Image 1 (cartoon, rainbow, N blue to C red):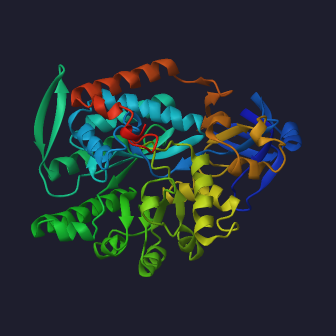
Image 2: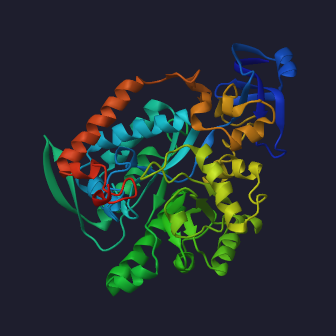
Image 3: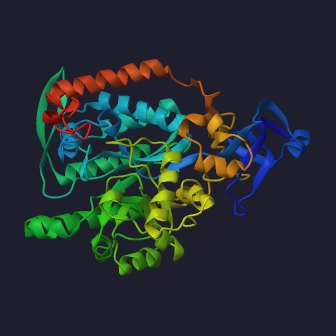
Length: 481
């Protein structure tokens, strides 16, 4: 058998239906597809490869999948995070007022490189955040994000949609360094989202896909919004959901909690192609609704929402709900390192039940590999190492003090590894990270570009004070120091 690449000698964690772990294994790749999996001895005799990669002392596993994160956050990170709701307000201002396409391109490259170096080959990125604010006033912003991801070489599911009613909203663009504000209607945002889907969904060999979103409607929205505004929001959510179904796109929402899944069901938003994020403090009937409708749940154990309430992820998994793992990265206090979030997930639920056996190690790995692919409708292509699937493959170097002795590699991978242990990353058969060093891009240039765009953002907002060390940074007031 001829192959382009043979990775051999590592402990191969397949995540296939049998969950095989091949201690001295090998994976052959041709034309971007996995063509053989077996022991190193077997494939060494059967396969003639143009390139042989010695993975001895490494774990070989499917690319990790992050089902919930935010584009744009990478250039904001911890800004204003000590100031109550200030960080959310910054998001809203940046994403509507001071983020030209260059901002979205620089942030996309930075975030994609972070994911790449952490072994995340596929990630969902909401084009904005702060609960409702999306950069959906013009397709240029999504296009800039997509181009940035493609330059790095990972896969991105870009979620875009209108903001929550009422409309219109004031956005701004920048021409020749000057701010130009303008009014944006729901129709314009919806048309933008449709154009992005038409232009980018399932393009570039499946590296870019589009999801649709409409912000969650919760009890406080019906209580606090004008009656017509709330009615408009309900109608708009139905329209966006219908478009997603018609086009075969994932429909996602950020910020479900007590009672909102009931509302989503009443609006006809649930279903096997729906991905609901956070889902804290759900009622028993909402857990049952997720199971009955085969709705997918994005659990973000490191997010602030998981402090405000608890996602009953383990209870949902027990009745067959597909619960998958998201980072909610990269801000205000968390990275895109899915190893961190796997470990956090285990401790989060074990502490709740006071039971160290809750959420087994292998189960949490499923949440960000094969189950993550299932939640995105991609499990026929990615999520496991199986013959015929795309070669999204990661190797992780066990020759680190915190990973030795190198026995029990599956345990080492989940319980002790971190993203900086990743050595090689292949996406669709292309080695986009090699020997923990070489990527497609000049990384120093990417970092400089990101820093420049962040500085320009701060200057345009006049918010340098949001970068200062706050008085309570050490847990004491200045007067107490």
